[in-house]
Amino acid sequence: MKYVVCVKLTPDTEELGEVRAEDVAGTDLGVTMALNPWDEFAIEEALTLQENHGGDTVAITLGSDESVEALKRAVAMGIEETMLLSDPAFEGSDAWGVAYALARAIESLDSYDLILTGRQSVDGNSGLVPAGLAVKLGVPFVSQVAKVLELSESNVTVLRALEDGIQTVRVPLPAVLAVSKEINEPRYPNFMGIRKASRAQYLATAAADVPRLDVGQVGAASALLDWTDVRKPPARVTTCELISGATAVEQTAELVERLIADKVI
Amino acid sequence: MSILVYTDHTEGRVRPVSLELVGQGRALADTLGLPLTALVIGDASGNAAAQAIAHGADHVWVAPGAAFTTFRAQAYAEALQAAIAAAEARIVLVPAVAGARDVAALAACALNIGLAADCTNLSLDDAGNLLAERPIYSGNIVTTVTFRSRPQMATVRPRSFALPERDPARTGEISELTINLSPLTDCEEVLAFAAAQTEAVSVDNASIVIAGGRGVKGPEGFAPLYELAQVLGGAVGASRAAVDAGWIPYPHQVGQTGKTVRPDLYIACGISGAIQHLAGMTNARTIVVINKDKDAPIFKVAQYGIVGDLFEIVPALTEAFRARLDR
Ligand SMILES: Cc1cc2nc3c(=O)[nH]c(=O)nc-3n(C[C@H](O)[C@H](O)[C@H](O)COP(=O)(O)OP(=O)(O)OC[C@H]3O[C@@H](n4cnc5c(N)ncnc54)[C@H](O)[C@@H]3O)c2cc1C
Ligand SMILES: Nc1ncnc2c1ncn2[C@@H]1O[C@H](COP(=O)(O)O)[C@@H](O)[C@H]1O
Image (cartoon, rainbow over all chains, first blue to last red; front, side, top):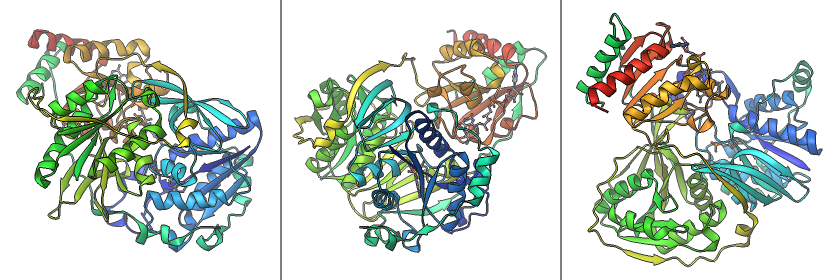
């Protein structure tokens, strides 16, 4: 059984607010970068499944050389192998381009059974890459996976969270699963893991090194979308008015009057 | 050619966001002089089709039948692909809710259509191309997505547009879609479904959200919040701390790793205002904070605040609304 986890390096969520609009198109955001928090759940799930069912784990990322940091975190948590897809040809790819390159790279592995991804990235926020990956690989896709119930050599049974309830879904392998945060509690890397991660080698794989990868399908030229007018949202103009009063009854009565006067209620 | 709206529903009950998109789809269609088409998949689609027409659709494609009785991402995506072809869709709008998101992504990628995800506003440029506004960087940056090809597709968050008026006198055509499902659809077997305990309003559709955090101290602590929500016809939300503690289920979580909400009124009770929580709620029209710590960062995004113990303030607020609104 081979578990492939797709990971991405994204801004540390504490510093997302400091990202400047003019830096979004560039290569350096000027903030601390970290493993996309959603991907920790995917890594954790791969490790748990490996503990229970055996097999091999590999983490794969597409990005700049700096993306090694995301792979390091994966290795520190316990992932065995890594693959860094890095090439100027990938720059400016949209979700379908990223999915295409990841799919070709995954097909180049000696085998693959379960492909695990996060739900979305905290920078692009699209959540499109996982579905795109399934399409490009021609395999089933299940998102919002809240639990893996059963895994066999040939198929996987999971819980899928929908708006009005939870389905039990079974699909044959290989398959792409996008996990939800309910699925597990990601582990913290231990000292051994961190040491292993810092000693591991992370060689970049270029577009030309991936068999059957057509560079015409990646990069800015192939993108179907453009991000225009990248800007900060209008600042929330708020001066908080503290409602005072001698008692809770007085305060809340005053608040109700304000909300009614403002036509909020 | 037409504008196509994916009309998400549960057993014929159309989700409000679907109707919001029918409303906005109607506006775009009128500007472009095109008809508005809707797609309804699954059983009881007749009722949902009638609702889509009453709210503005000219033509509804339905996909009933055994293959669509329960949600299956691949089968539904292939139905959407068929509808995009049948409707000669120039713009496709899909609600950004669980399930429908996958359908949109699978169909768009299979047809190599550009898809702008989780949009909060839509308009047209002078050439009639879609302009899709969406938050990125977890709401810290906004961009207007433009498209290099057609069709153009967007998933759109609940409450981005007003609900259109229902006009029962409106008429429209309903036709059945012919779909040749691929073998891949057979791979996805739904073995069971456990319906969620349905609450009157879900946190992302609610116009009023009463949210609780670690300050509510336990599952029982949410009881006064539910009472206030009931009086106001709102929904109950939560911080991740409250969800992780197991006091309230995950669908209630608001924030970066939960739902993004934009109600008219958000009342945060016992929530400190971590940046990841703010990512999910600062688009609320009015924010009220109840917290015993006057220095809690959440006061910075609020219009009104009460410094005090939520177990005293929230019940008093419920009573104050009851008295004032006669409920
Ligand atoms: C990657 C990542 C993603 C995250 N995603 C989310 C997310 O989606 N949503 C989210 O909410 N958080 C998220 N978090 C967690 C976030 O950082 C905070 O830990 C969390 O929001 C804190 O929840 P809280 O405000 O309820 O708790 P606390 O920060 O502990 O605040 C409790 C507040 O309650 C007040 N209080 C206590 N008792 C009372 C009382 N009796 N009356 C009135 N006030 C009282 C206190 O003064 C305090 O301000 C995320 C974190 C990370 C790292
Ligand atoms: N550049 C990338 N390299 C590897 N995995 C990625 C990349 N971008 C996105 N993913 C995966 O797809 C998920 C959803 O990301 P997104 O579609 O960008 O919101 C992430 O949680 C990752 O698991």
